[in-house]
Length: 245
Image (tube, rainbow, N blue to C red; front, side, top):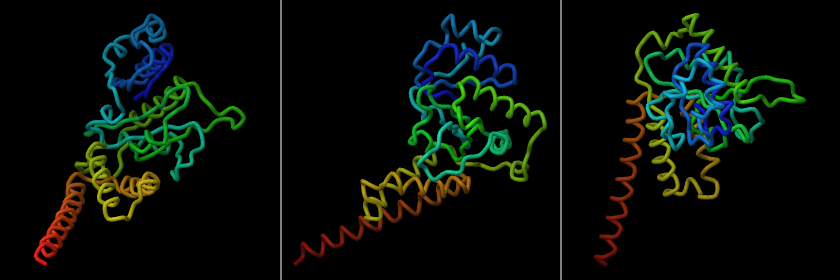
């Protein structure tokens, strides 16, 4: 999944390496180049069919619809309190749930993923490179990750959890929960507008680590809904008693 790719050459090269490694689904989020340009076709060589089949969407949330697991990539240190893993550590987790859609997210060539875009992922990888010149070309970074994915796919990686079909919550289901949680916490004064983003980041990390199932998200949202109802009911009673005086 490429967020706002700017170079047709990169997009074409990425299509080629994906086909080399047996990967098929390329998603372009608000591309800033023509993925079907002559330059892209020349770099793709025999992978032009992947360029033609690439899904183009406007936003990252739209691209992640239906995905239950997402890994974001970064090439630079972050102020976010997140654990950065190496590709070989995190990528097997993506393919250990073969029955459900997953995503590997790469940012624009010029800036990488923003902190806000990183929030949509549950795990984060950074490719180790020379500290004196750590930044990799986008197509090179994708190639390394594609190789790792292909390697583990061929080995038939599975963990104990994948042996049993689990109905994991999708990224958009989690996002709905986070938005409802933030709104309620703002209303009760636990969060303040100027610090809400940083505090919600902690909640996201907490719940993302647990890999929530759909039934669990429904349960949590039910609790929030009941709390909202109780607050409204309490306010209505106060208003009623106040009007009787």
